[in-house]
Image (cartoon, rainbow, N blue to C red; front, side, top):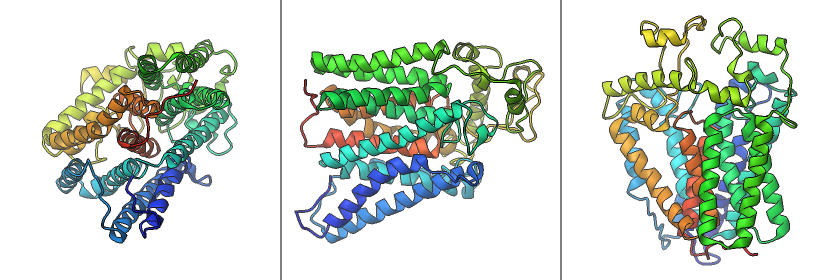
Amino acid sequence: MITGTPGSRSDLPSAALRWLLVVSIALIPLLFDPLEPGRTLVVAKRNAVWAVGGLAALLSTLRWMLDRRLSPRMDLRITLPALAAVLGLATWHAANPHISFWGGRYRGEGLVTLVCYLVVAVATAHELRDAPGFQRAWRGALLVGAAGNALYALVQFSGLDPVWGFYGYLRPFAMQGNAAFLAGYLGMAVMVAASGAVAAGSRAARAGMVLLAGFLFVGLLVTGSRAAWVASWLGIALLAAVVLARHGAPQRRWAAAVGAVMLGLTVLYTAQAWPFARTIDEKVLARVAADGQTLRRVPGEVHPDARGPAQRLAMTLEHGGGMAVRLTVWRGAVAGWMRRPWLGQGLDSFRYFPNLRDQREARLYAGRTLPAMFHYDRVHNELLEMAVAAGILGLAAYLWVLAAFLVPSLRAAAGGDLLAAGAAAGALSYLLALQVQPGFLGSSFVFWSLLGFGAARARSSAPVIQAEP
């Protein structure tokens, strides 16, 4: 962290900044307007991200002005301005600079939002560096927000949602607007809870964290996100590798307990046994099919949101299923990228309308009714999304920033730091899921904050977390 001497004038802004980071990691994923949830979900989260990013920048500047002896020790002092400069240039060069700067109506991740993400990531990395108490508070706040979302997801899964009434969909999304967004968010939280289960200092605390990891994993399962299922298991495998390589038998037993709970829940979910059993009547299916914001299905075809786990996995490779549709969107994204290869077409500006004159695409939508102006506003691949938005230069700067945060975190994990391992596993699982599905304001904010937390653990002078027997 960056701090002055005890009692210095910089203590107050530093404490305020730390509490801002702690509160926001729980609050932003929970935000929505219950009176107009569908209309204001993006606006509520976007405004909160802007407020937190702006306040974090203001408090950091104020703290430095009050005590100029403080050395920021900004390891990212070249990396972050480079990315911000490239994104700024791409925004100025964009086909629609207004959208690129402020963000689109239904996504809100323009230049202002991305800069706020970067500010929060850096502030988290430096303010929580040598503050173990705030590190615990930060992890607790993250898990509180995730538990709230998981609980709401189960309410939706049970058909009891009093606010959205499912809004025409059958897969729970809690306060994230889409099941895939919720799945990516909970995948990160599961890794943080799992690492806490191994690192906790008492048997009761460990057992509680195992149960919490299982509860969050239940919320992830019911989203039906295939990418998040795979990514969560790979994340747990990374965490398990750290425990096996650097820790003893007691820690291995608790890591095995987390894995056993996740495996048992996966088996129950796959079998659609309690607590995952539910009946969807024809009225619900008809309402989903009639939703004007989704593709109308071929008569007699089961809507993807109503399919069971095995059916959803099989749908991935079937004609007209997940990968086939994504490949067409990716081809359209590459074509758009090649028209502006160096600086892209602008942040949050991607739009792809199905090309029904192409025989391959026409076959995908044969027998289906496309709503008026139906299009994809997300590439469903994070790296390709950045390439389309900011070109080769933006993608290179983006990868550079990711490496600047992740490499130290992975090194700390390899050294046996369980909390750094949990942060790295969560960030990597989220990145993996984002290669076939999009991110969102709430989950993206958590992702960048988690990157900052992993860097804070890696650069902390505190002892490496070695769980007690």
